Image 1 (tube, rainbow, N blue to C red):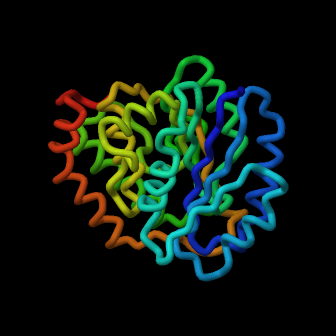
Image 2: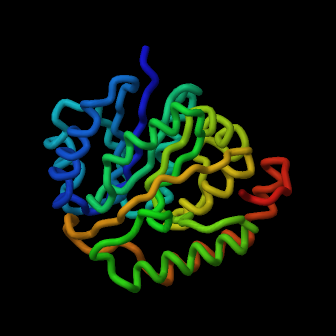
Image 3: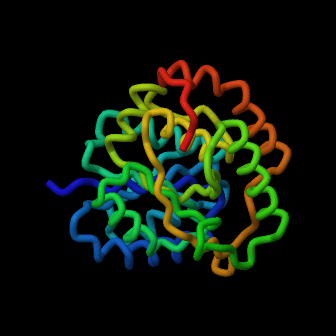
Length: 258
């Protein structure tokens, strides 16, 4: 059996983006020969019929929609997906997390899987890498992302530069299994947008060495506004500070992040 490619997508009121997202994804996934794609959406309390729109636009793909009765945040949605996958991910599988708002270049999945084939266990789609960038993204949103990256890099004693907060990333199956063994089936504790920085830190504690592919975050094709709430997001990043010592103990390390 081919290894699985699990795509985890948290969504909240993304009905207007569902058809375009599915069409773009189907175009990319149909050319994959070495993986068996599975789409796992977590509908995080949507009130606009997002789940129904996803099912109608699924185009016969292997689709699972998990639902929260109320909005809990993207981190909580990702946690639900990891809990649902617990026990079914094999070492040779790949798990990709990404946005459902058409802001990411889904063609990068192919590049990420090439890195995976070369042995990478963690591949980030990074808008801050050379060749990456932003299009039509509000300045406040870029500034908040960069501020969050600066703070978390300082907090985690991380080397180098680049984004820790972008949702779009690939995890090897063996990395997911290590993370679940160390930190529980859901892996992440953060309910909000800080989950991406948290899982990056935890992955590094378990020995993962991240690789990056340049990404362009493009809001010209998305419909609807940002779901991020500034104060809530800032509080989520602040909470990371208090959790770092405990995570180090859980992973059995006190090392510096790469």
